[in-house]
Length: 303
Image 1 (tube, rainbow, N blue to C red):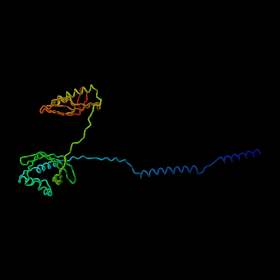
Image 2 (image 1 turned 30 degrees about the horizontal axis):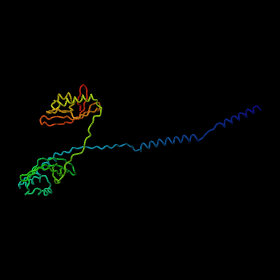
Image 3 (image 1 turned 60 degrees about the vertical axis):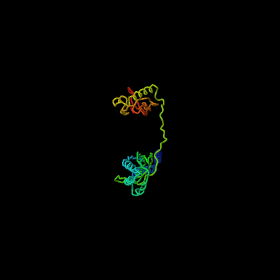
Image 4 (image 1 turned 180 degrees about the vertical axis):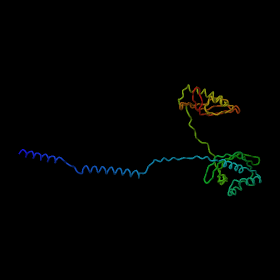
């Protein structure tokens, strides 16, 4: 009986042990599989993007403007020679014929025909050129240039004479060999007028104390007294790095007119008009300067 209960107890324990061993098949394995799939997918996607992605760069466009200097010497000389021949004549047949031959050297065939009768054989006046001003030389197109000029003429009729000034615009063509020809006849034009522009006048802004103003004023009065006749060696004591050139003229210093003082970057900036008397002409001369001064042991003009 006792053995029976022991055997029964043993069977019961074995049964409980068997029941506590739970095996989960599939759940963990599926999770790991999913994670591997995600990892491999991410890696594959990254590799794909690396090979197929388009590099994007910010492009900064910068416009470079090249400034070219146009040589207008030939155009101006050609124009002046033409103007002198075109506006000069005597009321004599030979003179008028000579003028016609000369201007043909500047004009196209069509313009030669057009200008045949500009000065008639019976014209009562004579003309001479006293001055020529070239106001502008402007590139047009197809190697053509517009020239605006003024001409001063002395017009004589019988015993009377008068000075006249006229302004014209004409067009020239310059070929690859740099030869010139007038392709548009002198046409009445106008010269530039006076601009109404007024620059802003500087004002003292209180950044320079009164003692410094007095020191700088005395320095400038001393300097401009001897400046017109000063040598390079003497200027070196007052002027740094040739900030002002030697003049070598006989001017008598009179006064400083309305100097303006400002402190700029630990230096003194001065706007000043210097009144001189020209010893040769006895005329008054006003010279205007914008100066930068600094002080080490003494005041010096550095700009």
